[in-house]
Length: 157
Image (cartoon, rainbow, N blue to C red):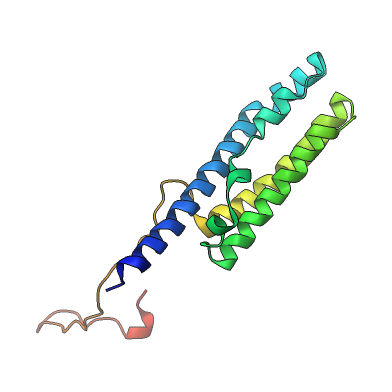
């Protein structure tokens, strides 16, 4: 049985994974829902506020020690997602493009972000999803007289 200290550390990493997954999902949901409207508002009002609020993230408040609790493969996936999000945020903050070009560029970056998000969720999971595991042992089944014999071991799945 793991020591209480190990359990706490494992629990902390799970909490970090969950918060990163929640944050990434929130960003993706907002961006997908507001994509057309945020460009329209920028075109009409020339205000960057709706653009930047759409891609707002909690991630900048994560500390190095928080992220160090993740496995290296998880850290790479998190970094890849937030690097693309940072690229999108930078573009939205400083672009001088007209609305049509802004719409094209945001569409391209949204596509890259969707790919990174798919990779991220494949590695850390989605919010609320817990990795399942079964604690058990393999027991050889003996067939009763008159019943079908079990499949050979290599044919089972």
